[in-house]
Picture: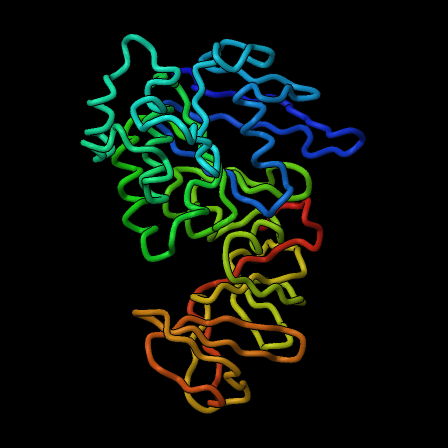
Length: 332
């Protein structure tokens, strides 16, 4: 089966500023792909290129083997939900949903039932909560029966305590729909995506499952964007490396890089030792300890309460990944 979306060697510039270059990405039917990265890295620009709101400076974009690089937005079969939802403020829910609706799409009543907003068709957007407005924006996008749905920061305006239930709701509403979404929140990205494209150094540094992106990031930049990380120089050869924090086991004896990646779950604390817990947080179900040793800050997750000011020893739980000094090289 051919890919639903194929982006080939795409580059985009604003004036003399290159946003990204040599960007390649593909996704399958029904797949959820997340674009993760910091502000200004080009995530939303890429969505706009796919939607046809801007044309890439170089490269091509194909949807089901059709070149849509220069096609008008309304002929692409792509739906876009903006971060601010972009609902028409003077139009009712029904009028918003019916805007752009194709003849063979579900009716407005069916879409209202799908998003659980029956009986609200005559309300204005200002009479809805943020979550309800988001569902109307989704229904409007689905009314055009897109082959691909683009979501720009879908949870940026949602209260944290509501986010978990809304993620589940969104996955249910869009079951079977291919979704490409933008986020700067790594927790959202990990929870939703089948695969993640992590932006770094002017392009996509790694495109893989959330598990692989987190446990084996390809660059220092990817490691930092996908979770708490401590990068510490090491020396030696074989499966044991020496650092300022002591000796650590590594995954591969062939690794030639000079930095170790430490994640919070790679180490544990035991009572009494040379390291001081400077901060301790209860996260609900587990604890997080912050330990500083010289210029290094280490985050460690634990199951038992240890108070700020407690002296501890560090015990290794998992082999560590070695990261090359250059962010352009791959982790070994």
